[in-house]
Length: 224
Image 1: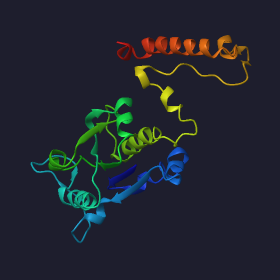
Image 2: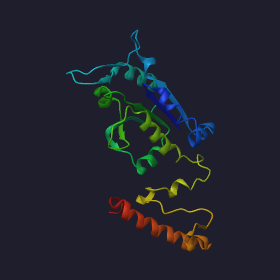
Image 3: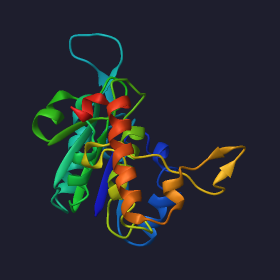
Image 4: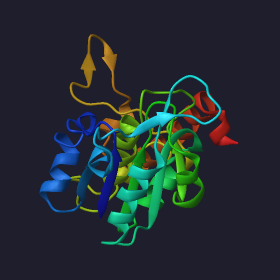
């Protein structure tokens, strides 16, 4: 998989992709992440990338020209399966969509900033608008990192145990059951006996039962 990210502040994305699972995925050549500095596509002497909104109002807007120039340049080199804009008013990110996205080959992500981007980019070039929640951040870089993490960990070979991602919360519309580790008794707090029984069939039944119980309590909207 190849992921291209357009950002007005690319330095914000350095840390998320240089540690842990995302770093190993790149080292294994399972994913290639390229971050593009939007200012490199500005054609004015000041390399500015924002402007005032037509009609007035507070805040600046990312200009259409540098974003268009960047997308046009990238699309001349490869065909993207999705052109995604990270925005609070987009479709709420969920596990089902990350599963679908993990099967794609080329993804382009646009990070907004300030008051957003020129609407014409959204109308004519973006194929999917994604939100990570009903709140506003300073820019789309952190949401882009969240999206990438959620997708990349699903790519075969990224996790040491490939079945791990299949038992995460929201797979099959259930939250994950409780997990425990050694010691089995800590300060009198004991691990459920079934988990130390060695009976794998009964353990799976227990986990499924607990997943359903927890989902009904914490996320009744999912159980419905």
